[in-house]
Image (cartoon, rainbow over all chains, first blue to last red; front, side, top):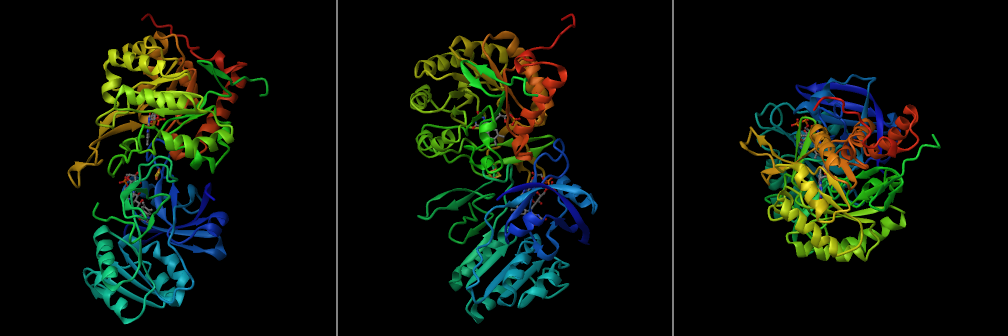
Length: 259
Length: 308
Ligand SMILES: Cc1cc2nc3c(=O)[nH]c(=O)nc-3n(C[C@H](O)[C@H](O)[C@H](O)COP(=O)(O)OP(=O)(O)OC[C@H]3O[C@@H](n4cnc5c(N)ncnc54)[C@H](O)[C@@H]3O)c2cc1C
Ligand SMILES: Cc1cc2nc3c(=O)[nH]c(=O)nc-3n(C[C@H](O)[C@H](O)[C@H](O)COP(=O)(O)O)c2cc1C
Ligand code: FES
């Protein structure tokens, strides 16, 4: 089910310079949203930031009927979002897209997030709890580590400037996690170079991987075909998929990160 | 409200109301069908079809501009046969009035599609001579009056269904093109398609779209579209479907006043999935409040009193 609703902003706070956490009240969306899905949010009125902005569900607060998003101010749309005060309503369409494949039978999974790509992994940490290891990478100051750390069985942080955890890339931490024990699935979201590296490492270790991709969007529901990304079909033939409905989450053998 | 008549007649095609969805912005209706009963629309124009399946342009295919968007989808579609088999039956079952939008590289392609569609349950065919983002097609047909007339004439003889010719705004003189389509035997016209534009990413110093050029749509194009619709309506004797940047009922009423017999809603669907329904209701309210009993009473009903 897809909904369009004016939802109350319960909280909108800057958790780090230019990064905001917004809590949105919507009992209906909260009850059906799944990890890896996104919300398509109107950011301004028709005439300025015309198109809706896709922002991932970060995590749900089921007891409070709220959805939490974590976003970075990039341009006019996210700037608008950051200026909205609690008590105001925003126009949200969602939950949209194919989220992460979740299987409670899995014994152990690894989450790998880079930068804003950490955001959609928080709900997975909630779903898997002790069974997941979270590897989170940042350029400098981390965010969402408290929320994810409280749920995940294990949390390792990497920062490029060494301000916290491992100094370097988050992908440096992955090979060891994959060799130390049997991992059923790796979930990944972040910048393209990072996702390519994660894909390579997973292939080397023979571990399956799911990746969340980004593409600019129009409708957000599969009707306009502007959000195409290069993928392979079941027979390995190249073509295009719609990030908004066929994704944003894709399997390792579907994505073509170079094309 | 009950006694307001919203019905319009486009070349024998009776629409229950004058609000249509624009080609390429509404898929094959399925997606928006999850939000509301799409048989409430006057008609839907489906995604642009080609004779054979088409992959479309490489991404990125979209950029946002002030009050508008640029797309370079490049006619990604499953081909006319798959449309007839997989998509059309479901739409007809729902009682939707379906208009097929056809695109070709040669006149023969257009004719073959017209023949196939003529034997199907579509209500009308819209001949897209204008899609500006397909390198080999569109452009060449839509910009030369002689070509427009010739292509229209050939396709007209390939089938019986009402033929709507969709005009590109990327031409020297839109009125000349409109008259050429009328001369070729078009039953109706629709305009405007997107404006040919580009965008540049100053960070990467590359064009934002992989295709370099794309088509501009949305509120930014509305005044251009309105002017063109007004001029064309003043020159031709066949019905006109007006579109370009319509986002609410006020915009729609402007196009009707300019002379359009119906309006199409495109980009606005992306912002507000319910936009077409709200526009139908808005037109109805406007008619009631202004004391008109039929939408036909406001079509072309503006007074131009300047000395020109
Ligand atoms: C499925 C998905 C989930 C996302 N989740 C998050 C998230 O949880 N947190 C977060 O901070 N960001 C997320 N993003 C990126 C976010 O959509 C962009 O940062 C945002 O659209 C930028 O809008 P703007 O108006 O601030 O920037 P502008 O540059 O002014 O935007 C101009 C246009 O480009 C589009 N655009 C710009 N950057 C991106 C991008 N990276 N991806 C898609 N469209 C873009 C905008 O939507 C808009 O249409 C996600 C993107 C996708 C596709
Ligand atoms: C994403 C997108 C795809 C489109 N595809 C087609 C198409 O396949 N055939 C066509 O005739 N017009 C196509 N158009 C043009 C629209 O039908 C319409 O003429 C134009 O967008 C102006 O209306 P609007 O401003 O309300 O969107 C497309 C427009 C958009 C935005
Ligand atoms: S955004 Fe329209 S199809 Fe994906």
